[in-house]
Image (cartoon, rainbow, N blue to C red):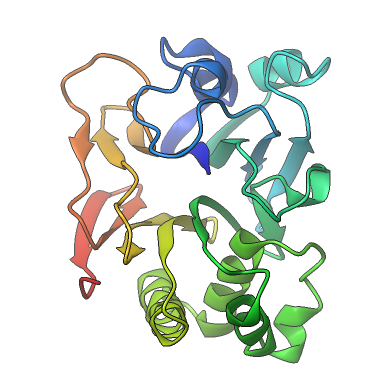
Length: 256
């Protein structure tokens, strides 16, 4: 499990999500308000952002909590971006601690974070999911991690439509989870540098929370509201939201 945030809009400091907001990811690391599983998120902190016209995102991850990292507070105040993903991590049982397992994960021009878990990933379910990856995608499976496998499943289906790729990937994972009589929480947030797609979804399990907010400077998707402004809107169950510079659109998924 984790707490996450994604932003698209006018460039702002990365610190806005990580440290500045009244209910920033730093605060959600030690005092989450709406977390279903676990009590804290102190197993890692990460951010991926796109810099100018460079299509490939930059990534900074640490296995430390936000307040423990010596560099990130100052860096995040000085680094600005018009599109980024950030997260604090609560490790799931069976998934190792360390920087290779801290989101956001980055592959070429894409990045992703995941709030949830695939139960049974270290068994036959995970083995079948990883075996279904293409050879190209498998070269990026550098850590035994359900979130990374989920992200690579999206990449295998991506051409130029992130909504379609994410929808198809979730359908594939849904089928495997049901085949193995398991469960999964699948709040997956993926970006190709042009926009962000976020899924509010689960299979045979309660859904984790997910919210959006469209403001004058840009749009947010978050696990928990970053402040007490009433403009935070819950994402409907079993739906995707697509955040771009033009705003936010909502797309249904098949309920599980």
